[in-house]
Image (cartoon, rainbow, N blue to C red; front, top):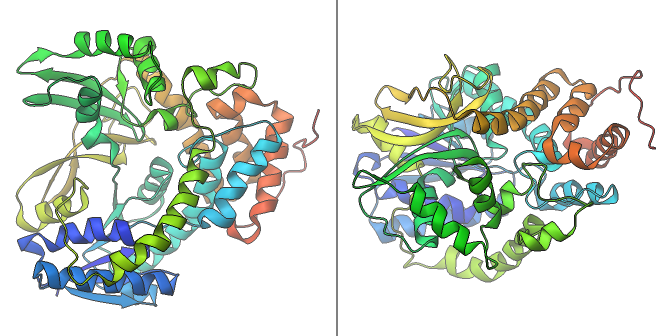
Amino acid sequence: MSKITFLGAGSTVFAKNVLGDCMTVDALQGFEFALFDIDHERLKDSEMMLQNLKQSLGSTVEVVAYTDRKEALRDAKYVINAIQVGGYDPSTIIDFEIPKKYGLRQTIADTIGIGGIFRSLRTIPVMMDFAKDMEEVCPDAWFLNYTNPMAALTGAMNRYTSIKTVGLCHSVQVCADHLLKSLEMPTDNVQWKIAGINHLAWLLEITRNGEDLYPEIKRRAREKQKTKHDDMVRFELMERFGYYVTESSEHNAEYHPYFIKSQYPELIDRFNIPLDEYPRRCVNQIEGWKKMREDLVHDKNLTHERTHEYGSYIIEAMETDKPFKIGGNVLNTGGLISNLPEKACVEVPCLVDASGVTPTYVGELPEQLAALDRTNINTQLLTIEAAMTKKREHIYHAAMLDPHTSAELSIDDIVALCDDLIEAHGDWLPKYEKNVSVSTSRV
C-alpha cells in the first residue's frame, strides 16, 4: 500500500484541504494517509474528521494516526509538512513582544524580519530531524513543505539533506486572479508568468487574448490608491518598481525598509498597514476553532471540494505521469534565475510528472526586482548558516542585513535584541554560543 504521511496533522482545517483533495483523486484510492502530530488531542480530532470525510466521499483510502514519528514516516512515498514549532504561545508572542520593546513593529513575522529569522531557527533543527528519520525509513520520498519560512526551510532541506524537497505556497496560483478581480477586470483567457522568491515572486507577464494587461492594471491601480484599501503596499511597489508581487500587502510591508518606520508613523495609516496582524489572527483562530471543532470533527455528513492547493495535483501527476505545472520553491541550481545567488531558494514554474519536480529556466529578472529579492535572500542564507553552524554571530548577521530591522535599529540594539530573543526562546532553540568579541551593549 502506498503511503502519504502528514506531519503536523493536528492542523485540522489544512489537513482537510490537502488530504481531502487527495481523497477525491482516483489514482490515490487505496493509499494510506499516515497522520502524525505531537499534540495527540488535535491528532485525534483530525483522524476523526478524515474518517468522516472518507465515508462521505466514498473514498477507499486508509486513515491511520501515529504517535511514533518514525513509524508514521516508514515506507512513505510522499511526506507533507505543515508544522509550527513553538506555536502561538509562547513563540509567536515572543517574536512580537520583545522586538516591540526596541521599537520594532511587525505585521506577520513568518518569513523574514526578526520574527521570521527566529521562526527559522526554531524550525530548521526539527526539519533536520525529519530528514534524518526519512533518510532511514523512506529515503526516496518526496517532501512537500508548506511550513514557513518557506525559502529558509526548503533551502536548508535541499542543501543539507538528501531528501527531495519542494516548497509549496498559496500565493502564486491565486495572484493574477486576485489582482484582476480587485481591479474589476475580466479573468478569462488570461496567461501569466511568475518568478522570484517565496512571497517576493513577481508577476512578470500578464496577458489576455495576447494583449498586455499591465498598462490597464497600473492605470486602475493608481485610481484605486486614491481611497484606502487592503492592497496599498503592493500597488505602491508596482508603481515604483514596475511589477506586482505575489504575496499580500500585510506581508510585504515588513519585507522592505519603506513602510513601517518609527520616524514616519503616518505611513501606517497612509498604506493601511495592519501591525500585529498575525497575533490577532492566531487569537481569532484559537477562538474560532473552539466553535468550529464540533461541526468539523463530528459531522458525519462532512463534504469537500478539491481546493487550489498544489499537494494533491503534485501527487496525482507523479502517480499518473500526467504533467502538471506548479510554482515551486527549489534551489537556484544552475542559475534558474540567473541574477540571483545559486544557494538561494527560488520560486519558479516547475513541471511535475512521474520523474518528479523539474524546475524551468527563467533567466534574468528585471534588475530592480532581483535587487529587492537579494535583500531578503541575504537574511535567509545567513539564517540557514546560523542554524547549521550554531554560531550566534550569524544570527546577528542575518538580523543586521534584514531590510526592516536594519532600517529601524542600530547595530548594538540589533545584537541586544537577538540576545534577548535567544534567551526568551529558551529550549525552543539549540544552544548558540556567544562570540565574546561581539559587543552587545546598548547605546
